[in-house]
Figure 1 (tube, helix red, strand yellow):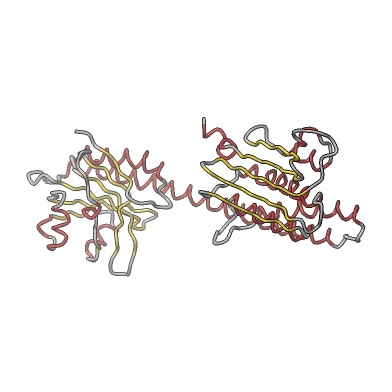
Figure 2: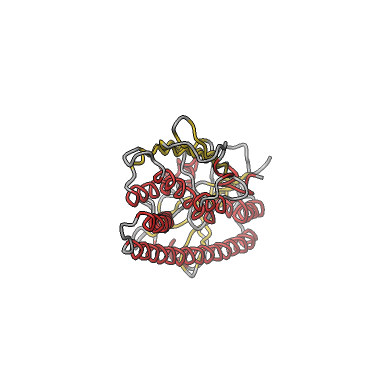
Length: 376
């Protein structure tokens, strides 16, 4: 007969990897050392001053072939003052099925539970959760000897959960500091762009250089803005593309038709957000600059399927000055040189070509671009 552990619900302080390693081991040791049929970890919620509600988050069971129904794990409410005082004083509670009401008896009878022992988990002297051990053998009763491993493993679990909570709090503090820095940087960039806009004189050649710089600064700022209904920036590709298009349309008075087909959300790696934003910005600037007429529409189509992203930026244009299959490798204009310098060594393919009166920039982001070494 083999045992198994099961994750029941998510908890922000108990990640799946954390539960599948440390929690698994401790619940298994508890079950094996006490001959319990099921060992369940619950988190506690203080509903009112008079009772707590317990929610199951992880379960270990002696018999892996037996299917444990979720409702058999339902604990109801711990509402007796004596029970709460015992748990808060780090004392276990023993419940015999025969002492319960009909509905609770029915739930426990599903898995033939004869008695249930509840161990408190105190974190910073507060009742954070409980461990429930089920006994299905009516001839077996919990003994003082059982309490020794129970106390040891429950205190060990409380200790590692407390350490995990401290780690989560530290990570959250770092994220909050990063969000603050990003917000400050975004505001600084917007301020710089505003100052540059004051320098526009009406001289096309001078203004184009300024507009290039303004557009690039705004694109970096936009890439770090928060997507709708999000508490922080995420590098979401769809959001970045929409922000860049909006930026180009406003700054260059260009008409851009954006067509997005994405089968799932996709986040750009943190270290690639700025380079990718600048590459797409420069491609759109080139399309805006080299339109045959100012009212010509730029078509920007992006398709994401199975972690493979293909983009095409198309605009009506005259032929290239030199005959080439890929302008990216032949041209030495400042814009193309910037694009070449920003492209990563792997994960992106870019071809800029002229066909039948249109310039097409075909950009492909391969799965390795998003996931890197994780794919190996």
